[in-house]
Image 1 (cartoon, each protein chain N blue to C red):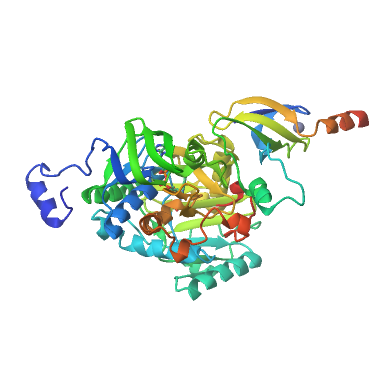
Image 2: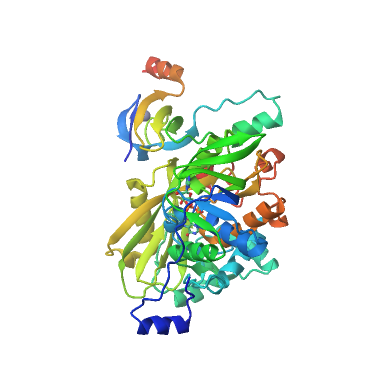
Length: 421
Length: 94
Ligand SMILES: Cc1cc2nc3c(=O)[nH]c(=O)nc-3n(C[C@H](O)[C@H](O)[C@H](O)COP(=O)(O)OP(=O)(O)OC[C@H]3O[C@@H](n4cnc5c(N)ncnc54)[C@H](O)[C@@H]3O)c2cc1C
Ligand SMILES: [Zn+2]
């Protein structure tokens, strides 16, 4: 694999770009690996990379039924932030944000991480109090967080709708180190870096069944033959329940729901930040991509679904929210929209944990928020697989927390997966 | 748009309804173990394919329905009242 650096750019510039090698190999599956990760999204790829990098476990395969990054990895609205308050969550997401800050160098791949600030509007004194509490908790833990008053906000983002009498904008909670990154580049960057360390990335390799022996999973049936793994990790996001039941493990505190994303035609620079608008029934977040497109989204489609296809009522909802807060978007044309299947959990928090099968490990339950989590998710999932015990930050991110009554419910929305976000 | 054939009102767009959830949960007795209650409240089959689920006709008759729907194609096979006896009460009151 040719490294990306100034020397290679110049050399290839003079040689018709002919010295670049493939980004990652396309190997034939070996019959067995030390660790097999199922799911070639960001979490699977990051896990493989940190297994090799942090724990020197290099005989690793990532099995992906389609192409890497074809799932939620390549479908999200790319918001990266760490404004969480629950114990475990804030340490985890803050570590993730720190990993993001150095990710392009770490992977030798430009993931276009842009810390343009995440601006969460509030519209009532009650909302201000509640967000102040969360942002104070963040500050107490050393995460950057601040409140912008109306004057500051108007100066920074002059073209929001400041005349909405139903939901007047009073100010915003801001995390300046938050922002966006290029999702495909993150998937490719992790894949390329993992491959360089010896990881086999096996695409078009769908897992179709498991063979059990002495309580363990002995081998994995795939569309590319039988593959053995001493240890096996699930990182299949919206399809977690399907694999869980393939392994005859029963039910999970997860429901699969679809979330849509929208991309407009490209326009001149219009928005420098990520803006979030949430009141009553509306939920809307927007940023502008480096190509100039407005990238935005809202709530999920409100009914359980495994279809990677959005429905029209949410298109209308999102458009209405856009007009309420950003009327200047009124004439902009939508270029594309799609949906991804998300693993929504009963308390809105994730799982990085052991399972009832001793050589099987679970990474799941990322809700809307798994893009920002991917570096830390890979980091701590690799740590769990290598060391057999969860790091402090994720010690309660397991399947037992519900019976113990220690749910990690940031929103306080209760056991209804579609209400978490 | 999904079209749901409400037994009380006829066929309507799904955005007149609110999605409830899994219609097959059996809640255990009040003195059942913590484990059984945890299973009922927090753990789901999360079926990929046809499942029975509840919908509330919140912008219509406000009745709860049991809908058999595919979570892959969104095709609906059947729609029934959650509480069939209520239907009689409603009819008798007319
Ligand atoms: C529209 C949308 C917007 C979002 N916006 C944000 C955001 O702004 N910020 C944020 O932090 N998060 C966001 N998210 C969430 C985030 O994208 C996901 O939580 C995250 O990508 C999930 O992890 P992943 O990348 O590993 O999943 P995926 O990319 O879905 O990876 C799972 C992989 O498993 C594979 N797989 C499934 N079954 C099998 C099988 N049987 N055999 C082999 N492989 C299999 C799939 O093909 C898939 O590639 C958003 C999600 C969506 C859908
Ligand atoms: Zn009705």
